[in-house]
Image (cartoon, rainbow, N blue to C red; front, top):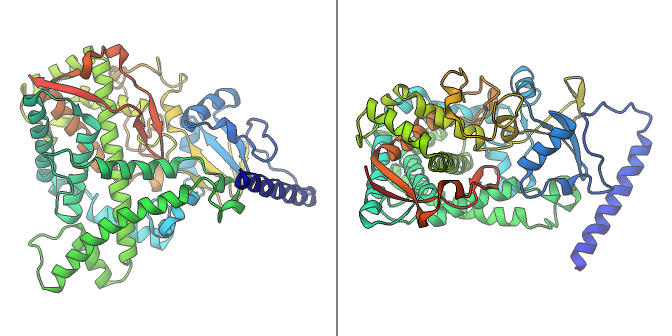
Length: 497
């Protein structure tokens, strides 16, 4: 109670000082801010965020329009909720909006100073982005690792087959996470970080999800910077612990590789960690801190978003049995019932691709994308986005905009069969991976892995919901973090095709 009273006193004092400064600056013309709710004293509109900001901000946009501003404590937030406005800031004025607004939470372990996700667009960011694009996500690299993806998806199918024979339910999100983790860990370190035949990955998955939750959680420190030393919600403190656990694991793997290199033992074919260590030795553009934080970015973003995308798509299919039967028929006619799916088959499966797009429309991996900021006043559609404002693009709201999508809350993959809209950042009605120079670097890998994993699960087994749950009773509620996860894990029972 005493600490809460102290916080309130500090906030009151801060507000009084801010008011005095505002009076002193009153001779300056006020910028024309976008419309928005009238803020309460001291806290502004913080109470309107709730625990699911993507939904509450979408509701507010219905009242105030597709560009609106909110005062959250001392911070101005500008929220964009239409394809036209997304195009304006992510393409037409991309450079002005390219700086990340790094939440205080990611200052833990100095992550904001090393992470490709949070660094400003400058030499350090370009070097890291180059390392990613050249060594992990280039077209040649992805083509060369096709056999690895085939192997990891086959391990997933073998695990589900074991569950099928034993008559036990599969946690789809956990199984997909395990596959994604082993795919990435083999790409980076040439090892499986999870036993593909055992349920041994829950602890790491929980760790990654807690990182996503803490980063996405509204934090008083971001809106009242004077509270930074206090960290009243303990968000940065918890994230420091989560980051520390992850860095300890990554650091141990790097040490093992350095020891082998010191002994002159090299791999016949270099993996990503070898390539990054070579860069350190050759030109010093990056150092070990960059590598550790880059690995954190890769594992956090690459595992959670892929697994949740597969889980959401499976959930939508099980809730819509006719759609499931239709895609099963497409795969059987094109490939054959129960046969393994290859990446080269995906272009011949338009309905499967439409299902992935429709699921991402309703359940984008990052519902508010990653926050941005502007370093000078910027005009957008006749309004001023003031210097230092945080800018959010509500991809979740855009995907459910009734002025863009017919029956926006219904799962209708058919809409994409005759609609030339893709997820690659060119069509702003559907931007689950963002757009512009800060588009998700893992997009090219994700659009191969997700339909491959989903299609393989569909074609290899029949499925029923655990516990006799009817399709219409399936809980589709979500849990908010930087990424969007299904609140109730999807447990389904496989049986032979």
